View: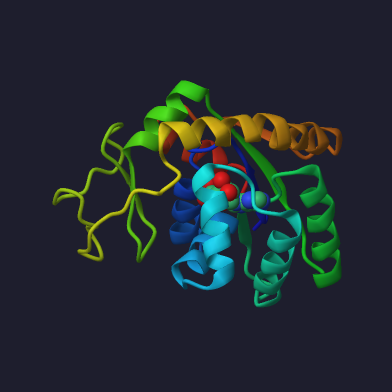
Length: 216
Ligand code: AMP
């Protein structure tokens, strides 16, 4: 199975499809956002610093992410395919990523660009709820995966959380950062003949079917 790299604006579904692929095909899901949120939860000085940057919607430094990611990738079993969700986000990170992969003998796999417009993204962000334990996603505005009991995770039976950066203000900054820093990456992968473009405004089942075509 191919490794997968998701490139997308905020709330395009990187997390949702990563979890679905993980469940169905046994991929390892690596989300730099989740790694950072874990550091924040641990309450370290570094976590506090990261928390301020994340809630503002800005990007954490390339070097910090590089160190964090390399540590994580070193723990991977080389035979298990993985999904990279939220990295690389800048051209510098693309170079860092290629360097790390080469060092560890890993493959970049398929770069999948999940396309979504700004308005649809905003609606998803404002309704998004996540289980802090299993990371399953729900949405109270779009109706995607409504929980059986209001705002309680169906599986873990604990209260769902909204992300601190899922406000309209932070979303606007995240979207602008994406346009400025992450959009050039799309051109880079295109020039390498490794970019699959998928419409992510459709319902989740249709988008998932499109993604599944590229896993093998
Ligand atoms: P995400 O969960 O992918 O939406 O990421 C949430 C936030 O974590 C971003 O808005 C950034 O502040 C930070 N973050 C996640 N991945 C990266 C990255 N590759 N480079 C810099 N900051 C990141």
